View 1 (cartoon, one colour):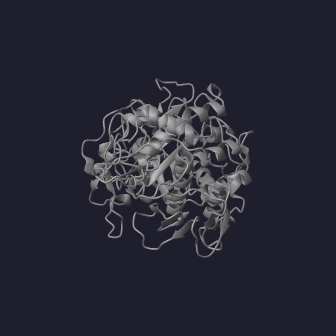
View 2 (view 1 turned 180 degrees about the vertical axis):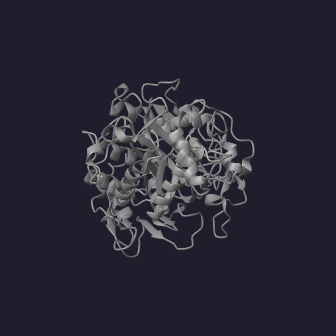
View 3 (view 1 turned 45 degrees about the vertical axis):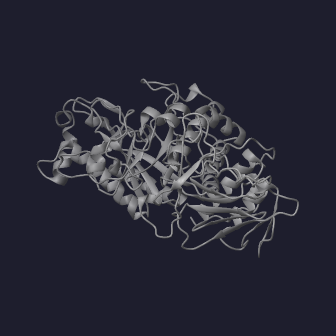
Length: 553
């Protein structure tokens, strides 16, 4: 599917920004540090970020020189704006700052790549849009090829009554407009000075299980709007599981649940996500978690030598099992134009029994036919993962899979280029520690179930995570349990690519849509802070929650 026509009515994406001024929390800035760049690679053009001094109590105040001896008052430099996530570097200047006036406009090339971003922020601020040269009082947006700071970085300059957002891409400029919107809501104006800002991690988002619980298209779109204001850029959609299959299918309509999203609704969700610079990552979990498929195709059910069935697992010795999954992947790939495809691969129950080889002779036979006489059930499962990854790549997608679908010591090994999504794994055998994947050279995305799993009904020892724990304790390198990996060389932005907060709908009736939205609001805000800025959070948790309430995020 091609890119959607950009929306002309940006007002539908967001309501207006509150205009009342609030006390501006001052973020202290120290001396400059050696520059770091997006994905952890050096960029000669990247702006240097000053080091911010953090405290555990009230935020620090920007240091200024001693007061002059004359009676004249020296203008006080401005303070960094209050935003979530916080800006990473601000160079203050003395001046009036910027706020929308009666004649203010949002100026950009309205026939160029920033037309949608311009209309969106103009609608949110109640301003007109215009092309051409900006004038005093305007907010100008521009893509500047070669500007440093990484693809998602931006520079926001406020000087002599005007504001200008620039970035090397439309995504960076868009994030600059989110800072504009929040700064106006929190402080009533943009402070005089220059912001250089960029994310620490490239993948930042929410994972949503719509298979076990049906969520309306409108509810999902509302979450996308909230995510965008937090500068989150990824929505994972787990839409197939034992309890349901939630997207219309033309190739296999028999497997689709009564309550489901139509393809038209999915296109609308994806189009909104694209306008908000969010990538939607589809997941068809296999070879486990396929109960909705098995109900209509019982011949695919995995059974052991005694005839016992294993819930949600297909028999991967049968070519028909791979055929139906591949058909569904090929059907849905055009619906999701983003770069990733999630293969699942977790909790295949055939590998949780005491002796898989004795329990599943048909799997052993298939493994040995394909991979030789020493092959085992594990090898057949690894081959399944690699085969699905090959299909994903043939469709132009980069594959992802859950950590408990990767095995070592077999005849064949998992494809090195599948991203590992580490959740820990609560299967019958101990999950491999995350450092093993990193030492193998694999890139990892953090979905640590200790902090980032919101499981409806709180079964199996899970409890609803709090934003405070994420804000105070979690780091991207804390992949399992509560202790971060000690070797920081393994957990930089080029290795641990980011994180998603995951909503799993194990007990779908435990919470309503509204309760879920309320429950995940502050955890998502805390996650956005920790993924954008690698330093300690500049505000106390209580101050952070007050700011989140004021900003409506």
